[in-house]
Amino acid sequence: MPTKIDSLMGALRNYLSNVATSGPAADFLAGFDWQMPSRPLAPNTLPCVACLERLADIADARERGLIAELSAAAPALRWGQTYTAADFGQHFLDNYGWVELFGTRGHFENDSMAGGFLILGPGIVYPDHHHIAEEIYIPLTGTAEWRMAEAPFRLRAGGELIHHASNVSHAMRTASEPLAAFYLWRGGPLAQRSTITGGGAR
Image: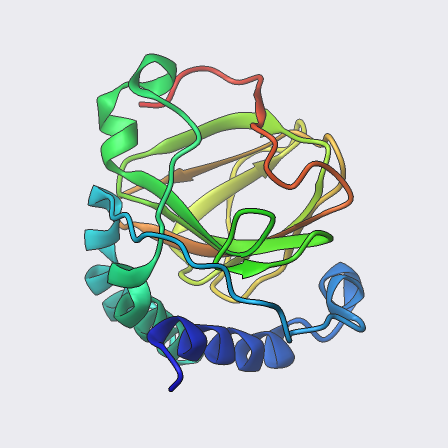
């Protein structure tokens, strides 16, 4: 019997078939094999997961269904954090988390690409950082500002594709509303901790 995590994977595949149709995102997914072995992982929740209810309220219709599937599967998912309070403070940790749906440590096994979801609560700065892996982000809500390299922060829409080449610095910040975003990593260590180059999170 399909699980809620299986349903989330199906919803994600359907969503990406509609939004990742050109450019780097289409290149990432060209020939991608969605038939991945499942990996049994013990669930782990985080405070940021509580943002999912609000995220469903503020998302556009196209993203709302995917957020609903993420919310339904959330109690069974292994949510994680890369940083500690010593890095950015407890407020950041209480409003930050991610889940790897597939990859080298995700709910489905994949050695060539990782994909999952990031949540940031309101009033959070994810400082400038970079990593070897090439990355695609797709915000599921148009409520956060994003920066790449030396460019200024700017608001990005829900469903907009954001491409970060290998080792290009980038940052995100939220205002009064939380952020959910889907990410893809390839071409580098899929579980690498990012190198932080920006100031601390507020």
